[in-house]
Image (cartoon, rainbow, N blue to C red):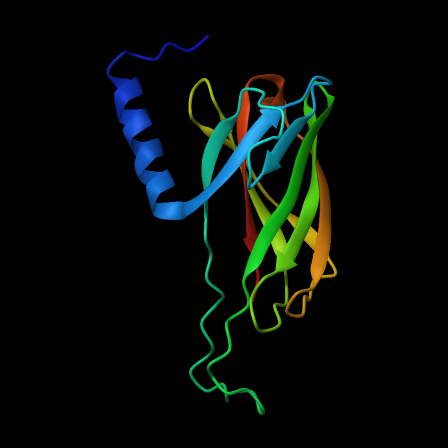
Length: 171
């Protein structure tokens, strides 16, 4: 078992708070009476103990320098903005975790190559123990369109307490 000095904890807490402030979007995490871990952008209706974590608000990739603007677009349209509308995490085995949910394009233009980036950290040590990606179906979302994602990861880090941060990504 690793030992963490008392001086390390305030520094780690400061780094976490600063990262959360930079990312900008609050996500609520709670475990229901069946042991299923849920993620959402609103707190649960029945008030179990909730943990919040802040997720980044990604911007779509910048257009290439020689790219021409799309015909028929005024330039005043909202860019694509993919939001996580439902997230769940289920432990399938001691080292296997399943993540699934829904996303929606809340912006005004199409988003392509939509996926979910996931970073899992060990809550005991604060170390990143998994970085992965989950594909969204369909991977191209028109304005207002929704997609789903589901991914399963087998990693020893799930045998202890972990925190998972999910982030929508697109082009």
